[in-house]
Image 1 (cartoon, one colour):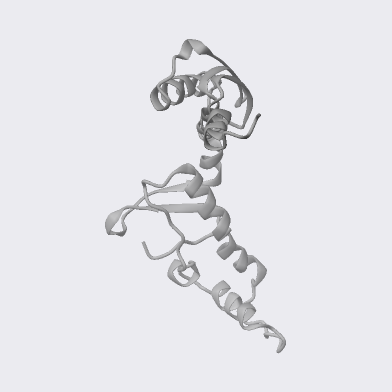
Image 2 (image 1 turned 180 degrees about the vertical axis):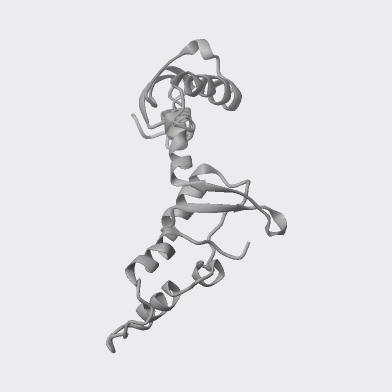
Length: 185
């Protein structure tokens, strides 16, 4: 892949429609280069060669971060050997928020509660509405609470998590009492 002709590149042609027009003396080097680019008659001369791309194995958050940092609207997906295998757009990244609530619920139960934390799913009530997850139930140890909530937040399509979880054993205070026996007396 050599480069990309972006909307910004094409807008230069609109901004500078007359390539023969005189250039003001006070123009910066950047403005002069933009005008030269606008006069291009081939894609090779018009395209942006400072290519921002991503690998096929990149996650959705990685793609979003790269797009935001580079201030681009699309990312070419480049496989090994430099072969173009696709293009990710901002709209593609936003599709994760259109994920059906049932799919989100299933992934939280199957992948997070059972798969990642090996907990009994009958101890939890999870409600998902437009990507907002209400987590209710009991974990065995208090120290697991932030880890479970963080894992649920990481499920694609989750917009927000309302944490209403309780715990059976307060392993945080027990540890402090064992380390500092004079605390709590």
